[in-house]
Image (cartoon, rainbow, N blue to C red; front, side, top):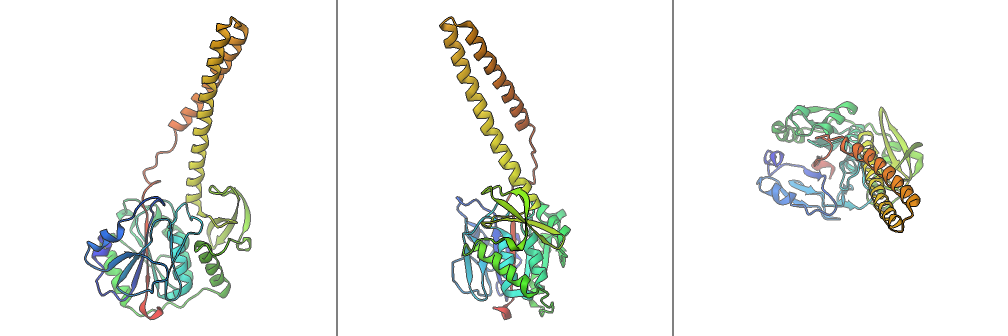
Length: 328
């Protein structure tokens, strides 16, 4: 909302915005943005034409994409654990609009947006990030700065004026993407749109399993940036992959804890029944097994209590992308 207030209503560009929201959640972001009384915001609709002076917001559970002239929505695999995700938007913008794109990464957790900014940079566009020292959650801006040659870093209060100035300037950055690179961007855009499955020739098999579907992850090297995709299309950067793996480990520990607690309760009941039948030797065996199950459960409880509690590991994350009018 702070950024939207500083964008003029006659901005000669279209703005695409992704906010990480759960698939089951309702989104009131367009209504909130419209309170800023600047650009008109709506949830994006499949096939609607791209128009200047509008904000297209990703609806829950859909990737926000585009082609040369129209908005596209996709229910392809999640990326960095999210749908909508920022990287698919940036990638589609880079594929279809090249050097007329400005990609902006705002406050947010982990590393969604980094690979997308790299695609924008490769295609000749401009890359902006919110100053990490100004961000409530600095992980996403920091990740972008670590891996991508960023054109401008600014606090949130200055980003609107900076975007407005850049939109008004002639596009002078030549597209640097090669035909194979553009084809790769197009293939990944199709994955996000759920019109194709991921193919292995863009990487090599890694030793890691996909946290979502447990298939093999393919390792893709974009310069110094390494990312991962499985055969059906789930995508991750390093931080997001680690976070997803950590969540799966915790889920497995809770399942193991529940199983051990149930085993202990069952063995205790069996020991009581054996004792009631005066079969003391069998009761002792059950009691010892129940004791062992409780001991293992305590180890898991200690591990769960001692898990990470990173303030910056779970929060909403946002990204925007601009399309210049002469490219629409």
